Length: 335
Image 1 (cartoon, rainbow, N blue to C red):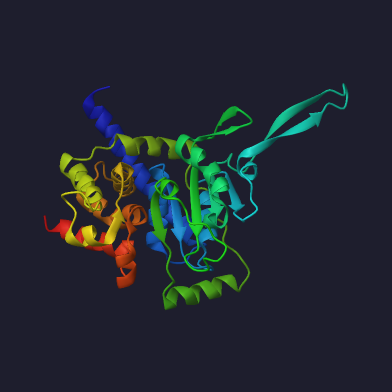
Image 2: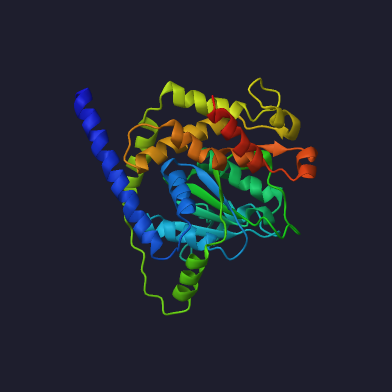
């Protein structure tokens, strides 16, 4: 196959991906009102094979959004409600003793847990102890789990979409930085506008008529996910992503005065990787075959905010990680 024909095939595949993206949005919109940026970022994470965490107060349809997205993509979907008494085996699965009724022989058989799926919703992840949270780490990073000394490979694709309630912190456990770093995007879910909330109330107080259908096959999704990694990103775009990441570190020469004064820990190298992969996915979903600086800039808040840890001085001044990242993006934009 010549370079020209290969480029033609990728161009066609990109156009199909953009069309599939619009079809998915159309299916999701039958159930979810508004929240365009939230839906866009969740699909970017899916196509980039990245996990994401949704942060928002109760009642904003975070769970409904994830389950509807799974339907629109034809993905197998499981949900875990995280609670203080949840055990690691409740996530990964456990061995059970089975008896053969004919021979009377007994043997242990592994009973798969809810992690064996395509899209796992970890609802209120911060309500379970660190030991149970850690059970999810191997699955998120390695796409496999270990139980009773044996390793089991998870299905492809496998993605974790988690939710976290920013209020009601009683009885919750702070997510370790190592676990937060596994999430490609942190997606902020806000209140709907007046018009959107009116539509929500109308839709949910009358007989349900909408039925979400799969807009894409599993094989197509896997092909698009593979194409995301093949898309090029110019050296200037990669440099911009890396400079943004390094500028969040207070001891780095690229750090601004605000970062040095208010930040305890900045983002690690995984943030730069996530920026580029997410930018490539955003480009593909818009029918483009290369990631741009604008793609990186648009996704930087969702990629960097949860990876920047501010200090007590920032808390005293009422400055959040999001504020620091927004100022940093603005500062580097002038370069």
